[in-house]
Length: 164
View (spheres, rainbow, N blue to C red):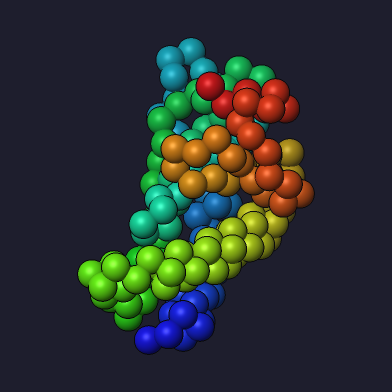
């Protein structure tokens, strides 16, 4: 499998889960079903920070108050199947076994760009149920965040939004 085939397979798998991701985001926006810190009410949650795992792209939603920071525990999003198709996962594993870092790096870069665009589009479609809630996306354990409304990337310590 070459990089373009793998990337197309990944993009197709994401498209199959468009509706499921939109429904899951809408559920979070409406119900705010988070395990919140003691003394924090659902109304205090004015944003959701979505983090995804670099290896699997599996997203987790973390409740956030943009003035005081995280206010509860992360909640994994429930999607019907893994986001990386088995053939792509196998191609990545084979490339790692063969120490083909160029293949892995180039494919992961394309997958990341596609994932961010996919997630941002789902956010925009889902947000109709709660237009005041803000959303952010990042890879787990990085300083960089993407504002899901504007697509702007910024550092978590830039001072615009309090994360910690």
